[in-house]
Length: 220
Image (cartoon, rainbow, N blue to C red; front, side, top):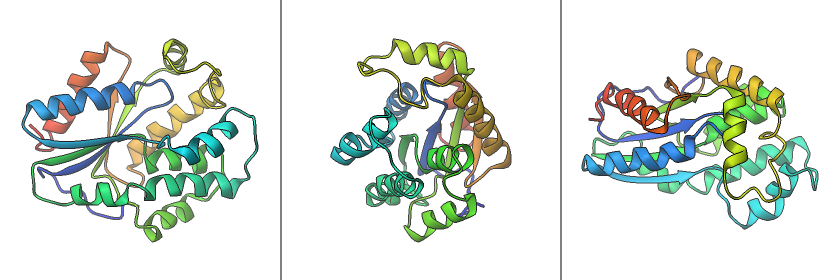
């Protein structure tokens, strides 16, 4: 289902880090970017969803159960979120330069949550939307596999949750389903090329495993 063919040993890449909520993708983005800078790569990164005014006033209240959105509103919200970064990400896709963009969470998240978990849009139609809106396809998505109970425990310890966890973060049932979904996406290479790594160990161990996965693809 990938829109572009993945090319091995390319020195310029758009990489996405994925995990269930609390799986550590945000922390790993920071660590991986730091490692790449030390290796003399030119890097940029972003956290998705983008926490802009639209997110804070429309999406966040819905996640907290304070307001309601219909299926189309959820899908369109997360499509908009990705298109805002198209021009920033596109230069990193398919270029033979020593430049890398690392995102934690992305359109792969939208596929997992809005389509495969919530059933708000058919998978083929959602990927078609991504194509029509010219959302860049990652060269590689790395799924950090963490046990749901471990992830939820981590999430409770994070700062910035004065309002409590959102509708996905606090549900062990949803997190278990998402773990199964992401494993399926990684195994079947849904939407793009995937690599799965164990995320249950110490953060530095996970970073090392991710860097080894990148090294296999020429990012050394």
